[in-house]
Structure formats: C-alpha cells, structure tokens
Image (tube, rainbow, N blue to C red; front, side, top):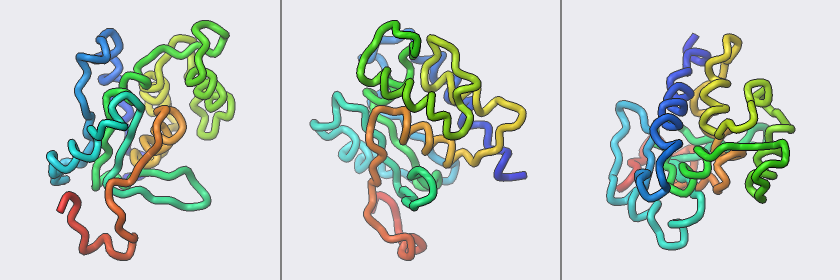
Length: 182
C-alpha cells in the first residue's frame, strides 16, 4: 500500500516541467526544495550550501541525508529534504533527442542511461521529452510501484547531470539525535 502509493512526486515533476519548460534559466528559482510536510529547513544554511560560487553554473543536487549501499543507486531520505539548483533544474527541463538531433555530451549520457533502462523508464520516453517528462509519465504507469525517495533519487543520480551530495555528514546510527541545519 504505502510503498506503491507514492505517485505525488512524479506528478509534481510534470507540473515543474509545465512551469519551467518555456522559461529562461534566469527566471527559474535558485533552489527547488522537495521536502515532507513536517520537515523543518534552515533556509539560510541551505542557501549557503547550495549557492556556493563553484556550484552556480553546474547541475548540483543536495540532500539532507543520502543512503549509500552497494545494491542500489544512492537515494535521499525524503524527510531530510532534497535541494536542486537552477542549473540542474534547467538541465532536467530540456528536450532529449536520442536520434542524433541536438547532440551534446550530456544528451549522449542521458540517452545511454535511457538505453540501460534500469527501472523501465525507456518504455515511456519519446523524442523531445525532458527528464521531468519521463519520470512524470513513468510514475503514472498503472504498474508503477516505487517509493518516492527511490524514484527521485534514481532520477537525480542518473539524469540530473549533477552529483547527488549529502548536506550533512552524520552516520546512520546518529540520525535519531540529528537536527538538520543546526
């Protein structure tokens, strides 16, 4: 039930695509925060971390806490928040063509990831879709069953063009006493 009922973040990706597909990079927000409804965020600390000069023009994704294990891709633990900079948002709203049109290094990387088709995303891809389009459509499939943390983590790890970076260095055992942003 709960594990498979996590379609809302996928729907939000469709909304984000509609909001930002025709805008210039300069009109996008500096940071997109994806947080739970009960997450407390020290916005000044997030801005300081996310808006570092070296991250301004490169796709950069931060998360309050990231699970790293040898079996799956790294994925952010949603309760701690996921933060996406403007360059990564811009990258994920751009049309993708795997038929040779508009070739770029990042397009080649994304098309290679699509061909790997780790979770079945290739079945929904159409030429001209963006990363947000793909995962919006993927999460709408009748047979979709993936926790939103895993979906968002997979998308960011393989398709954002940036490195998924932990914003806190706290071992899992210490998280019960951890306060993000303090």
